[in-house]
Length: 438
Image (cartoon, rainbow, N blue to C red; front, side, top):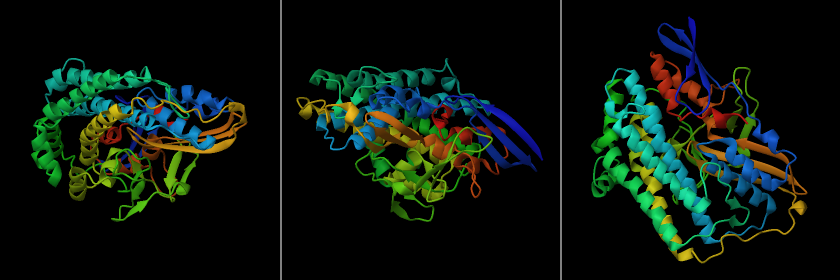
């Protein structure tokens, strides 16, 4: 038996991997998140509106999701908050756009370079030099301009406030946003799946993933070449808590072919372990995976349902779920932008209170972020935060073991024979250690 420690590259933040090898296989794995940023403690004792500025700085890649979870938690604590349809649409649009840019960057910057490490000659995906690598950065940067149109900046936007949003915009702004999202759609069709929209939708109808072309096909071929189609399975339990698409309702998959509604009261977070700064979170006492695989499976995406039936919650299926979600998000954003034209004259914000110092209450805000279900809980007394609690998607996926269960990502690496494969499996969860400890 030998123990190997590896510092993980190409992740947001710092993460360490400790592998225990026995007879050429990984017998045990630990994901170490070495630091804690303490945002929860920073918020205590501050006026509750300060949270709208501080929480987006939890993360530089998904800070907008933290803003959305924060404002929903504050509104829940304040009570009797009514949003205009205009504000609802803009919040949904900007949240989804952040997810889109994240997924594209993750695949081209974090996933594909791993195959170069395995010996593949993939010049187009070479970091900083490859044509496709540069195109992906450009498209993702274009997408995020949509948030700048409605929110003023990205990252660390703070334009969502209790009662709505602070921005006013014109139909020209909406048209600009539509043009930016259309470019993402074109990139998805031309580069990722390599076919016209009619052909893609025909395949989607029946979940015929074998017919996909472009970079998705290249990825699938490489997975089969290196035996990655069935590795990286965890517990098979999937969870989603926020409503991203119209067809999603909060729910979870037990791994025993049973779909259930999600009961928030069954979510428990406990202190972590001596080897990681991350806490551990359980639903009904058990670890669950959250993220695009959970969202797309629970929403009935034909591609993902068929892939999951054939290959379970494997590395290949986890990555493909995130890629194919780009289409679902892009399509939904275009629909919402088109609807937005009809509500431009509505008020952006309807202030739900007069004197912040009189606000006392508790609230919960739940959204779907790029990596999965994000939960903010706040307690306010006379306008001041007395307690703030954040459960990030990375805590669900990267959190440490408990007495009964390994963490979700830890479980997924057991039995692997190649340390690079172990890193790839861990990276398939879109590791963000910055979000994991607060």
